[in-house]
Length: 378
Image (cartoon, rainbow, N blue to C red; front, side, top):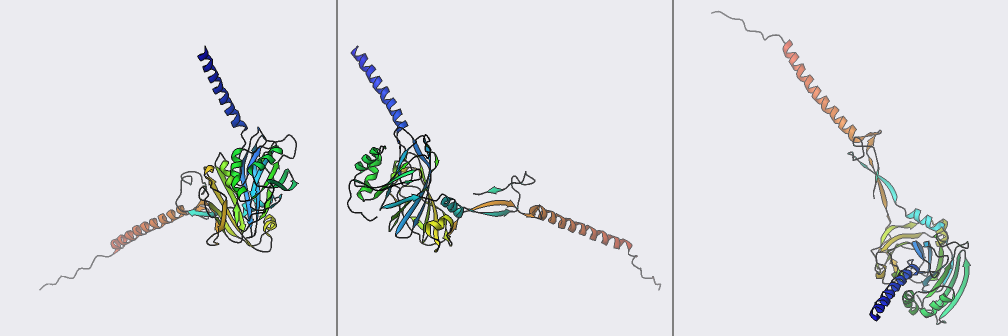
């Protein structure tokens, strides 16, 4: 009887553990974002579907404008962004990213081919084929430097000398800092970085955080161009970083920091900055735009933050998308005209040869017989 009760208790404990594990996976906080960490409200889910950032750097100060597109069922969330020095925060311009995308978009060019391909007459319908930081002075464990309301964001700029103190501050403000995230924050604490903690909430009560959020702009002093990436080690799914860098020269990451090799999508000088780009960098001097993308198939392998350096030269680069078109002359396929012309010439030659032979035969038939010499008698 006792053995039966023991087996029954063990089975029940195993079942309860499995249920707890499943529930834990449903309420576990979702980490997201290449240069920060998202902490949703307890028991809710939130993930960043897309992250696009523009970075301006003039050798002394850095400005990061970030736009997040999120999914989930959380009505509230907190986002933590480490920065090397004290930051000022404001709302970014939504038009900035549309202008950057337009500048760095591939150019379209046409390539002509001579012989017909599958889909061209006479094989089928016509078609076109495309290609393809300095250390601040000592501070209390957590110090609120400033707090303001920016649209749907409640922004608090913090310093923290202890991850546990930062965790306690978040808890008092309604958010739970996961232990793993506290561990990843420790290197920033040791380097005496500061943080921007942002409460995200929809404009209307009862709504959840979904879709593209208003961009946020963070500006801080820095004599090197650094893009915080360490917290993305906690991401469970592959990550992609899309980065627009506006500086005096073409820029490139100094290392892959555990991801795939970065790909340059565009590099070129913006001679006359205007619109949202002009508002970001100023309108008096040209600026060099470098557009990069990098994938992180295994985020746990990320080794640290991105540090970008000047490239070997300022050579330009732009992607090209080709549209292949059948070569035509006056609307007619060039191959057909060429073959037709060759056949005409060939037929003309054959016909000319036949006519020449016939003419020679006629001349021979019409010629008088050759005169015979007279016969003489002795």
